[in-house]
Image (cartoon, rainbow, N blue to C red; front, side, top):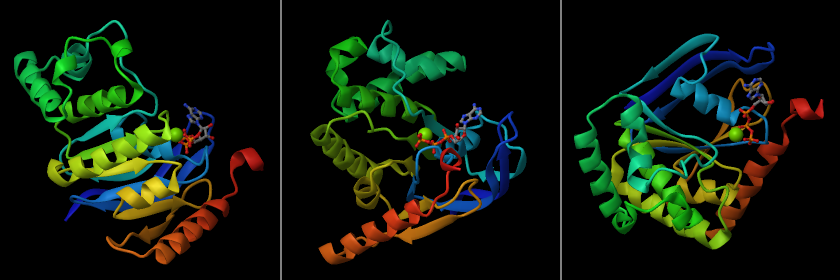
Length: 239
Ligand SMILES: Nc1ncnc2c1ncn2[C@@H]1O[C@H](COP(=O)(O)OP(=O)(O)OP(=O)(O)O)[C@@H](O)[C@H]1O
Ligand SMILES: [Mg+2]
């Protein structure tokens, strides 16, 4: 069963530079899909289009339920407490704050961050702030989570910690995820499927299915194949 179906998507920014050119792909229910590709190929653009932040030029996007979007940069507001940061999307939508607060507190509890609900972002570590951003993303009821390089600003140990955390959370969350990363190992570790942008504008992906169990040799070869698929790209910057 599909949670997202994208058909013949075209997208240009105002300067008429094509970023997506007749792109079609889909995501199944409970699937963890990563998108990798060189800087500037259009990964964030895909997610922004899916989140409705950028309007598509042409094509069709079918989403089951709504989507929840976690942007590329950390956007916790320093002057708001952790709870108030998490409640922000509900405030903006003028939703039910009482219900929202209950949900926020139960998510903080579940992710072992309940002690920090009254704290301010500066009192939290980078990894904790990323978890708070993730919880805020979960405040939207979306079935499909769009995560744009959520761990890119973290040190290696914290990052590995959060990868394990995300993988464990994913198995209980009943969500589907589109995850953008530059880290091939991270993508292989987390995903059911990896979509590689091989050229710009993006008209299709090179697809890699990730088996649950693989030996180290298979993993190494897979990584090599993905890296060479990425390197096949001719980006605008290089033209
Ligand atoms: N608002 C905008 N207006 C015009 N061009 C834009 C805009 N946002 C992005 N672009 C251009 O679109 C292309 C794709 O950008 P995008 O942010 O989607 O890349 P990306 O794959 O996410 O890169 P990175 O890995 O560095 O985050 C880039 O060439 C960028 O300069
Ligand atoms: Mg990006």
